[in-house]
Amino acid sequence: MTRLGVVLSGRGSNFLAIADQIRQGNLPAEIAVVISNRPDAPGLAAARERGLATVSLPSKGVDREEYDQRLAATLKEHQVEWVILAGYMRILSAGFIREFPQRILNIHPSLLPAFAGLDAQHQAFDYGVKITGCTVHFVDEQLDNGPIVLQAAVAVEDSDTPEALSARILREEHRIYSEALRTLLTKPWRIDNRRVVLGQ
Ligand code: GAR
Image (cartoon, rainbow, N blue to C red; front, side):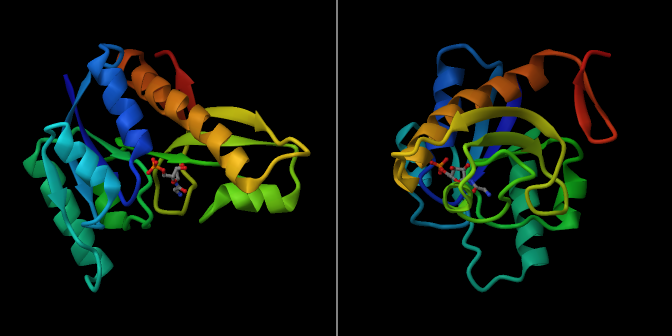
């Protein structure tokens, strides 16, 4: 079983969706540890309730390089093979990314490269796009930038509110994060320039 390390900052619904898929036997992986930079993150409490190993690693006041070294060390202590960012609201340093080459995934609530950064659903709503969605991508040193594994489109309705739109995007996030991970864990793939391509 592939050992996943989940890193989150908040609610943790994407983490729970992945945990459910593992529980139902749809994802050949196990969650080795759930780590949060925010001690009060609801996602961390949910992981504890499920009996998973959890680590609270507060980031407040800690230098980024030093924080990322602690984070990498904690993941390695738990023999993590894939790092799953699930609502982790910090940029990772180059040093951290080098520790897990091609093994860090993120989910972002827009069709990248549109609307990188914070509050992507509101950004899309305010811009007035008719289609937005979500993206599972590899993490590199730039914000919301790495090779794309899977995307799902969500139509913006005239009667939408940012909240209603966010809820529909979140449903797609929960579906495609596990699906992307399942593909990467069970099929041959390679990264060709920045295209993630299935097959040898
Ligand atoms: C999700 O919508 C995720 O796509 C977003 O934060 C939310 C976390 O929700 N991530 C980003 O914006 C990363 N740039 P969750 O804690 O319920 O999974």
